[in-house]
Image 1 (cartoon, rainbow, N blue to C red):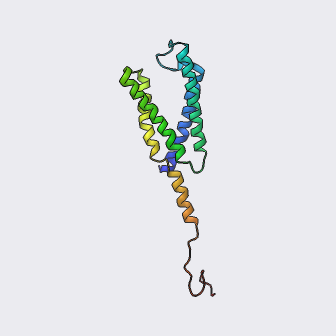
Image 2 (image 1 turned 90 degrees about the horizontal axis):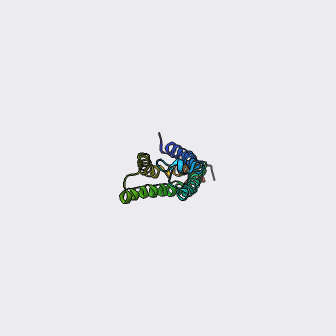
Image 3 (image 1 turned 120 degrees about the vertical axis):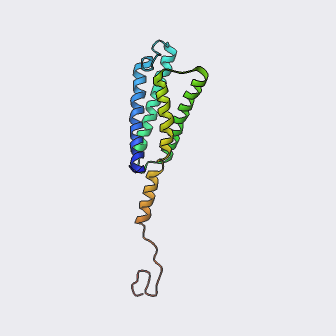
Length: 152
C-alpha cells in the first residue's frame, strides 16, 4: 500500500472511530468507562464532556480526510495531541498504578498509532506537488529558430 492510501485510510478510520467513541461516552457516561460505573456524577459529567471533545476531534479528522490534498499539519498536530493523551496514560500508570486492562490496550493503540500517522502525513501534499511538477511546461532554451523550434 502506498503512503497516500495509508494516510487516507488511517485518517478516515480514526475519524469515524473517534466520533463513535466520543458519542458513546456522551450517551453512556460512566457506563462507557470500564470499572467506573459507580464513579459518581462529577466523573460522569467529565466523561460526557470529554466524549463530546473526542467526537469533535474525530470530526476534525473526517474534515481533514475530505481535503485534497490532506494537509500534513491537519494530520501531525492531532497525532501529537493523541500522543500526548497516551503519555498522559503513562503518567497515570506511574502515579496511580495499572488501570483496567482495556485502558492499557487503548494506551498501546495510542502509542503505536500516533507515530504511525507522522510517517505518511505529507504523502498527499508531496504527491500533488510531484503531479504539479510533471504537468508544468519546462522552459525551452531559445534557439536560432525561436523558442519552440519554429523559424523566427
